[in-house]
Length: 419
Image (tube, rainbow, N blue to C red):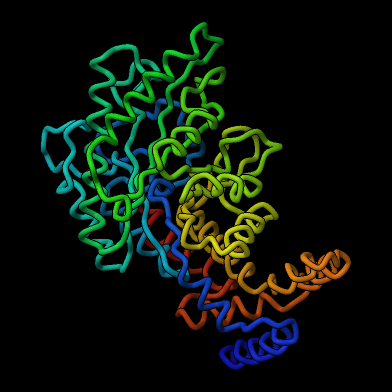
């Protein structure tokens, strides 16, 4: 009976969308093919497994909901469970602190691909790609909140070597999994209070990045991104890798620029920046989050900003120039549910954008018929998207919106509650 109702709903939706000039099946296939990278660090509150202990460097995860993954094996089990409820092409985003040393006495400046072999095996088994991030935080070699911009040469040298090793690890992932590995560089360097010299740390940051990227590694295999930030906890007054510095560096050095939805003033939105920045860089990385206040990374909701982000990507034909990844960590709720909600919402917004007759809307705009443009945009809102989404999930063998929460709750009772 349920399958019949889904198919009946789909047939009705196909008719209504066809009247609007949209092929539902083609739109679903287009949305399904776009990769969304799921961040591993939601599952264990950004602790990792290389012995970092407490979070430092402007990073904080709040909440004490039971069931946090304590080992890499538990984290992979939780990720595997989440994937059964997430439709579409998916990648997994790792931080360097998720290395598994297995007794080896090796620090981050000497990490090698073999420390991530279990993650590569997991990705191969699950049909995932891997993305990667150097971990420039929570480590004794931090000079206060400084890494690549530290005035101490020995500190900079340690973190430069870490950055180099992460490019090599990304290249290994790419070759083993036969798809690009995006390596994203975010550094927490900055001051808590007003500082006297804002220039010298930025010069040191640029010199360090130049050295990290000096080796010739194929950018098509390992696209490297630099990520900006407005401020972080404990560095509220000055951030070395600001928006302007990071964007300027990406433009000058032909790197990917990373826009994080939680790294700007509350009145700013990254959807408004996408096409402007892509006039000057070839590719863009998005860390899709939900900023409630400054520097907050909340679970992604299907809100207006998320939809605007996906509209910008789809309607401007940018799916091959924009890498989409999620980035948030909430320890106050079931962590698997947090993944599922965010990833499903990102995919919903992507599918919705593909189901909009945007070519018709653009034609009206080009002709100066702004009345028609507005009418078409508003009419889309009442089309039966929910029926398309439910059918899409069913066709992928993924539980619908009314089903997945019960699966998570059962896993919590049987697995998470026993940790």
